[in-house]
Amino acid sequence: MEIPEYLLRKYDVPVPRYTSYPPANYFTEGFTEAEGLKLVEESNQGNPSRIAVYIHIPFCRKICYYCGCNACSIGKNQWVLPYVEALKQEISLVAAHLDKHREVSMIHFGGGTPNAIDVEFLGELISHISERFGFIEDPEIAIECNPAYLDPRYLESLKKAGFNRFSLGIQDFNPEIMGPLNRESSAMPVQEIISLLKAGSPGNGVNLDFIYGLPGQTPESFAKTIEQAIDLRPDRLVTFSYAHVPWLKKHQLILEKMGLPSAESKMEMFLAAYNLLKEAGYIPLGLDHYVLPHDELSQAIRNRTLHRNFQGYCTRRTTGQVYAFGVSAISQLENGYIQNTRELGKYVDALGNGTLAVERGCHVTDKQQVIRQVITEIMCNKHISWSEQAAAFATTPENLKSCIHIDEAALRDFEDDGLVVSSQDEINVTETGSLFIRNIAASFDPDFKQSTNLYSRSV
Ligand SMILES: C[S@@+](CC[C@H](N)C(=O)[O-])C[C@H]1O[C@@H](n2cnc3c(N)ncnc32)[C@H](O)[C@@H]1O
Ligand code: SF4
View 1 (cartoon, protein in one colour):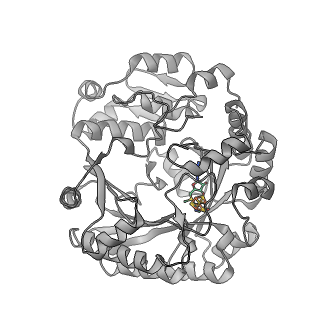
View 2 (spheres, rainbow, N blue to C red):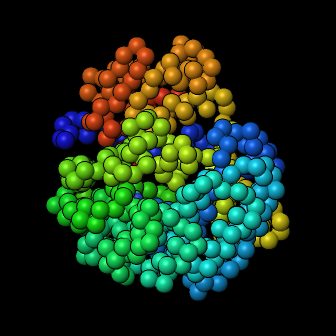
């Protein structure tokens, strides 16, 4: 695939990632514990009814200069034990408001670096959840890992604790690119890590994360990294566009001094990876995810039943109301979002006092639920059938469309530029259009205003 340069210039603007709708910058400050708990209680009637748990482990042994995550230095480990205790307390407090008959379909440990802490703590947290809820058969228990801190004992213990999906942050295989960014290479050969994770449990899933657009990367160098990745045959692979948000993450300013690649070069990196991965049999999902045909997400894209949440893509089987625990964590419920404080000390103190550390959030109105559904459908399945969506909300396509403030002019532009093909009832995103999926989603967002300091650029 090739992208004409004028499209790149036209659509490379700051756009939300739409991991939530409304986007997180619309959450209101001063959201109270009582408001949060009311949303939690109402979520017992939410659809889907399953429980997806997100646990945020913010600690990292070193902070990578490019990092855009909610991460902090682990220092001398002094915060780890109080933090794990606070997590358990938070899980107990929220569980007391949830219907015990609801089942857990997914637990996701993200960060930060969950494997920066002792694996025993992770096992304790899983047990803490399983003492309070039943699980569906074969739930997904996933962890994001920095491979610099993995060894065979740790990997075995993760499997024993019940983890069955592993995401390894590779970013780039070239140490000359990652070293200056304060990032160490994998401690073990990545091939060996994958073999150990699958040994005796071939159904275990492995994902590799990459980032393009970092200082020192060129389309040729990134292509080499992706070729190495293809040789490893991970079930899933993500190529994140480097999100430069120095107004939120000051340490990223260093990358400006090192020299960031141009938008054109970044697009070439993306396309080099896209073409290599497609040739190697990977199926592209959404904007930047790829899966092998045997993976359940590939089946979901074929059936148009792909879903996603802040943690990534999922299927209907594993989708649930997401209850998120830990500092900065965001619960994603049918009727609203609840975010915890981003300050570690505040979080631990609040839970120590037996209260939740809720700080921001928002209620999602009926109208916003419709918009969210349409945006999710476009972002995941690259397709809208107005009659199907209307049926899901027990209304007519006309009513549904009038409830969303569609930017018709933008849609006509997408059509003229070959990004979408539409008919009376359907909008289908083309292969080229998938690269600008965030821009297309924005045309269904009535509150979208272009602003340079709110979002990362779309390319
Ligand atoms: C929480 S980290 C994964 C686990 C572990 N901390 C690590 O770095 O390997 C999640 C992923 O976010 C991605 N990421 C981090 N900072 C980013 C940025 N500024 N732009 C785009 N992706 C980023 C990386 O690919 C990283 O693997
Ligand atoms: S990229 Fe991962 S390891 Fe590096 S600072 Fe961010 S969360 Fe920590």
